[in-house]
Length: 301
Image (cartoon, rainbow, N blue to C red; front, top):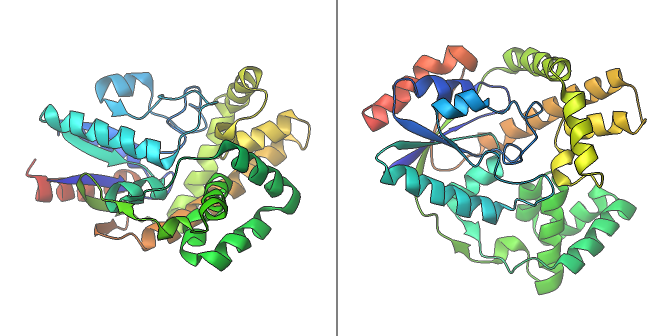
């Protein structure tokens, strides 16, 4: 059986469509979202509410404290375990998310890398502070353009890739891949940017109005060292405001710019998505019938 995947840029309506389909199909959601894994990051991630999760089981949501690290290898292990459990209950596991790196690892396998070296990673983080992202990214790009493309603008992935390169002399892409445990069929929501951009702005304003500032202030009280989780879009911008670096209005504008830039990167990533992929050129409620018909066509539900 091929596992269905619902992917697409942020705010394109993936969570809404999964919840609606669950009213007709016995499914459970396996989240492929790099920030929903963290407890306490609720408003800024537009996480499904406790009531929605009580109605439709969601896996890989609220599984880590913000101080804990979630690697792609750990995601892969947890996600494949969740998919197997859902299948054992005779229900349909639906992978839902916009973290393309996670979805790619699920469907294409993951390079079998050596375990992390915390001391070398700490040294690389210091180098990142001193030299900037671009200088270290160029170092990786000279050795492995493939890894540099995969890293994108993610500093944590850059540090990990350079750590492997400096330790072993080989970039991550040169290591053998562990084959995926399941096969996947993907539907990617692809709304026009003219439709998505106003939604991104409205969502950011809504998050601020619903208490994102208070959520971040509470998280900083528990995690004053600002772990990686609080570098997520929306959270990072509010942290800057709370530290007095700019006004609240500037924090909101930075959030809107950052989330639009992220959506652009998602479009670029999913444009090259390998495997069995269908693109649905809609988003939100407008995409529901097409999504439902796609599920019925392939899964007979």
